[in-house]
Image (cartoon, rainbow, N blue to C red; front, side, top):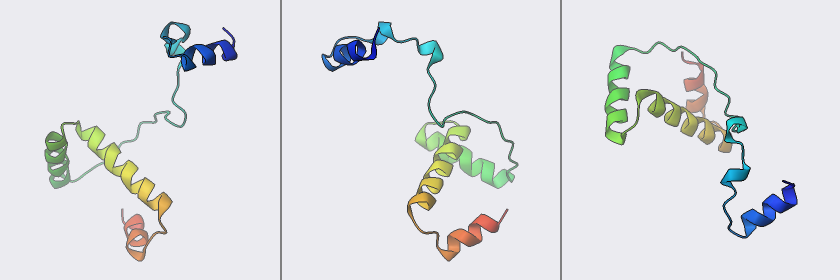
Length: 89
């Protein structure tokens, strides 16, 4: 199917799901890379409590919080506190 035909069908509100091969679908900039991070026990307990409260996994809460922090840093000029925090570790 040509792109114009696909766009027209979509714009008309018709079902285009049969015209898409989702096995080849990829999310841009979402490629996964595994990393291992060691956390102190008290931090794991806090992560687990917050994850349970929100209803997500520990891994999800870590990803959510890191994404929020990185978005904040990308949209705001880092303060001295941000710079100090980045060096800790």
